[in-house]
Image 1 (spheres, rainbow, N blue to C red):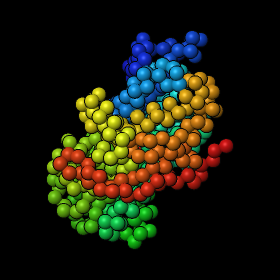
Image 2 (image 1 turned 180 degrees about the vertical axis):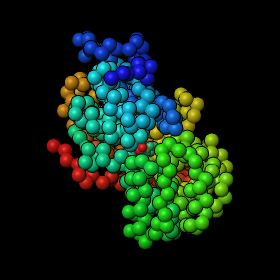
Image 3 (image 1 turned 90 degrees about the vertical axis):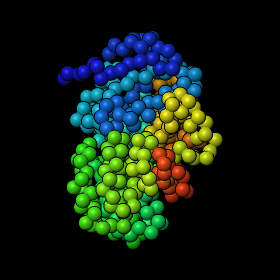
Image 4 (image 1 turned 60 degrees about the horizontal axis):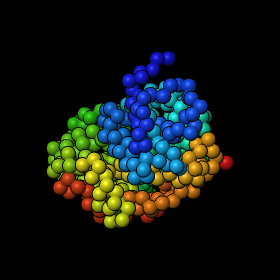
Length: 393
Ligand code: BEZ
């Protein structure tokens, strides 16, 4: 099996380690050296900005702790997963076995995440998913060592469906990328929307990560729904917002907040009026968010988005686990048990681990106006994701 070493970017964490790649055989002193956190994230392709924002949020949190968690220095080992599910098994294995990561943090794309989680469960490595919403991760594939600091696709879809009903919409067309995240966000939306008296005129999909939307937009125009529900993210979301505005359909556009997060400014006028539901908005009025926005924008000269918060909270969760074992990553059972009970104040509002290691959290209604998302209210309070099929010992 060949492995492209150029995909590994090993570097010193805030603690200032050497920056030289560790050999595959772990030296004995490594147990008392820095904790190795393996980051499996997209650093290229349409989801690259998402991977970057997660990394920044996590790095900023570790920096805020003086570069240490559980009393030990932290070193990050970064791998670009390219949002490519066929590469996920090889890259995860190399991170865990080759690079001897003590902790795994990844990833953004649901398909990549499911392959990663399968291996992480087999290896027993404490793992935090800082974005990918694949429902299975905290349902049938859940595990003692698997945690999520983001959302489940079905839950965010459901919350958006409830908000669209409350806004009076009854006839929707759905449009998304054809892969697990899009399908599950549409399914969650449809469950809530149909139950509340809504009707789906058509489900339209395009292959991931295609951004050719013209024929679908022409079809939506002939279907004449009263609303469109859509999931795209990253570079694809930006292209969709621009194409949608240019098509001048006059039909309200809704979606999970990934449709606008991180692309607010770049969308410009094209994004005006797009309503979304998400567990974060940078305008949230709480002390943790105010401090986070100040620190993040001060450090990186851009506003944080939901991905940055999910990275920050991966750090908060890891701190809970590592503090409980005073940095001894070999004590996996105790570390996992502490993370399973975690509850803390996040920039997103209250954060609490669910029974299946997902997040119980609020979902907010937002509207994009003049390059920023405005907070319109709470769409769903302390929503717990569906844990059906999850069996933890
Ligand atoms: C996913 O694949 O689960 C996903 C990707 C980007 C944003 C949200 C979810």
